[in-house]
Image (cartoon, rainbow over all chains, first blue to last red; front, side):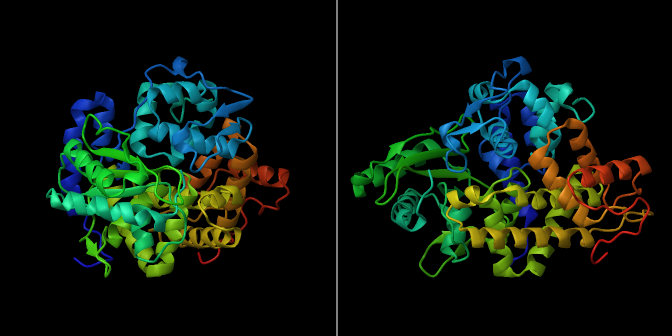
Length: 144
Length: 311
């Protein structure tokens, strides 16, 4: 094996062990999603989370939204909800790496539903699978 | 937290050495690994160290923290993320000279090729791992760091080699998703193309100047355009009526200016159908045409031959 060739077998062995270690510590639907072979390594290392009720998402639907400090490296500390490209980046980050409290504070359920077609195309399939599984209204045919 | 990588190499070396003395082989991964290889010139958000073997992260975190406190007390190292419940990752923060708070993260991660030891003794991830993980990242989020890394890899190994590895990764992904391979190509094509949405501010934050950012975008878009002609042709499907250019334009202005769900659904549908089994239904071509005209672009009339370069 030389540099420039991808050794999927080597990685798959490690990934399988990591996924087994993760499973007891996350919700069952997230564990199933993390067992997918297409899950990014970063999600195995730091599994994502998801709220259990869309009504919990109480982020602003207009005005400004405060960006949690962990994303200040690539986002402003506060951004306008109307700035859709930046809002899209924030939603992606919060769906990927935010805990439930951050999701509740940042995400707005109506905006999430509206932006879902684009978010779903950018997010890892495992994240999409869990969110659409929990909230059918987000499904490609459900968002309206 | 955006860091100056060079100023963080000293504590990184201390962490690797301390872990080795405790019997754990850590290596540098992520953007710092690319920096050490001389491929990347941008600032980083954190320092990532990894081990391929299952670690005792609680003990490892203590070991590294103890070494940094002994050898560099002025850096004020502290524990931040305790090892997560599933034990795959932990982090420290410290303040090396010239930096604000820097995060040093240690993770249990797979490798996609043999680890490399650089001439200066740095153990780093394989280039294969860098390619796969960068592809995973650009497929997961829209972040200038990932696109900059991808462009750096393309410049280092050459677009042809990167495309070869990308095709291998896509085939693996498609096989495990049980989806048609063209779907995987199209998804990545769209995700790479979205880098045009990243503005100068976003690149500037990570230390990528405007001129370099333009070059990054050009490289990534060129890579994405190469992907589609390289996609396997659908079984009996003619080419789409839409050109790549039109899709680029439409995607960019819809994402930038509109969040109307119907527009987005049309966009997603259009992109997914690109080069897939069927030509556009006339109503959809008309809709795309109207959308482009509304934004001042002249679209081909429905039914006109495709004007996609190279196809």
